[in-house]
Length: 243
Ligand code: FES
Image (cartoon, rainbow, N blue to C red; front, top):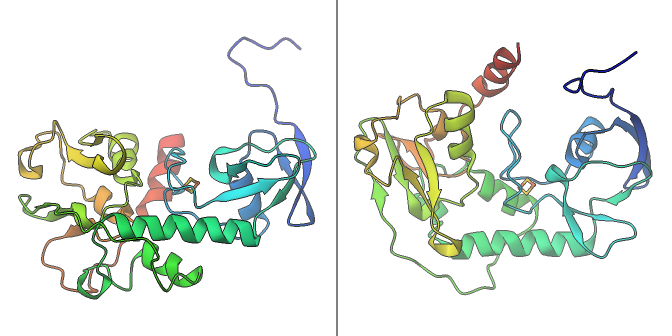
């Protein structure tokens, strides 16, 4: 049988080890995919099923035998015979350190946040036992964009996971949201860094609000702890697009 240049080769079956357990998978799958298929929990923040991989938060780091480097499991494809460790003291220390850096970088004051109790950063810290921040807080003076009638963008709470940027471009197709700047001076923007209300490309669909893991994108009119996110639409829209 001849294959046209555009035909994908059939997926190969691979065997590997995760946390001492022998598992099998198809070539092209990431370590995170295979771990989840086998009920092995790896913490994630920027990853969301239905959106492309970003690999930015680094919480999903794992160890691979034979390498001293750590690998982002959401962005690393499995290969034959890999021996992967997803839980170790070293990984736990790095994951805690990442969370501490996120908490200290902006102003995450859970007690007065509309997402208190519904926040992935908060629940991840509880899960990984982050009870104190050893780094100095930066307390930057950041703005809140309340120009839009329905939604609010609070840069103080943003962890730059880029889920909002990806859902806006990949699912809604509006491409309103983007990131500007570098490092600690990176910010989510609307259109060409305009107030949200002036961003003509925004369809006000609210998808960005509901994929945001924290209290950075919220609905206006919500009080402390009231902003629960609804994500049921994402797998549905993704499978509709695939068909
Ligand atoms: Fe893999 Fe964020 S979940 S880097």
